[in-house]
Length: 68
Image 1 (cartoon, rainbow, N blue to C red):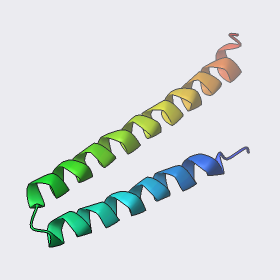
Image 2 (cartoon, helix red, strand yellow; image 1 turned 90 degrees about the vertical axis):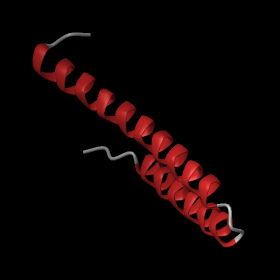
Image 3 (tube, rainbow, N blue to C red; image 1 turned 180 degrees about the vertical axis):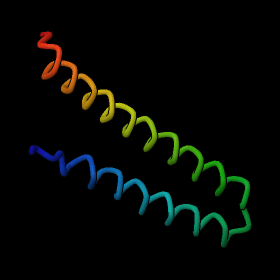
Image 4 (cartoon, helix red, strand yellow; image 1 turned 45 degrees about the vertical axis):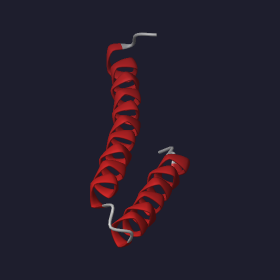
């Protein structure tokens, strides 16, 4: 089975960067901005996961329904 390891590392990298930015902004007293950064990071990762799930469903449909 072919696992796209790059996508996993990209999601982990986004998580680490968002966590660092959130911590820095929270220590500076800008909690509102910190929450926005976290929300935007979550939306980006959610979009990436949705694309991966879409590719999975396309592959399943091509295998079982024999469509090109």
